[in-house]
Length: 90
Image (tube, rainbow, N blue to C red):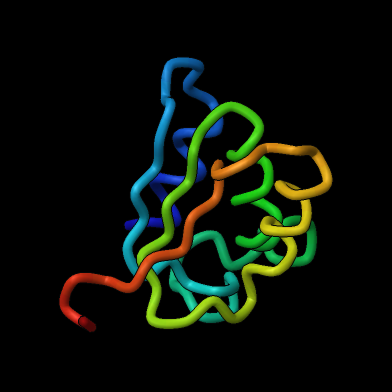
């Protein structure tokens, strides 16, 4: 549901923070919106969300999140993207 939440939140103006647990790294790994992948994949969607919101990803690794991290750095959106270890993995 993290991916559905992310997409739904793109269209809501008052969302200031996303806390997303185990967001798939790609639409290829998920069962929702598979046809969106040729146009927009989840790392690019996270970057879109960063424009208006803080995004905290709870992931076991930081792999595949280079694109939103780079966009955040280039646009000087300090601390808008955080990747944290999930509580169950600590």
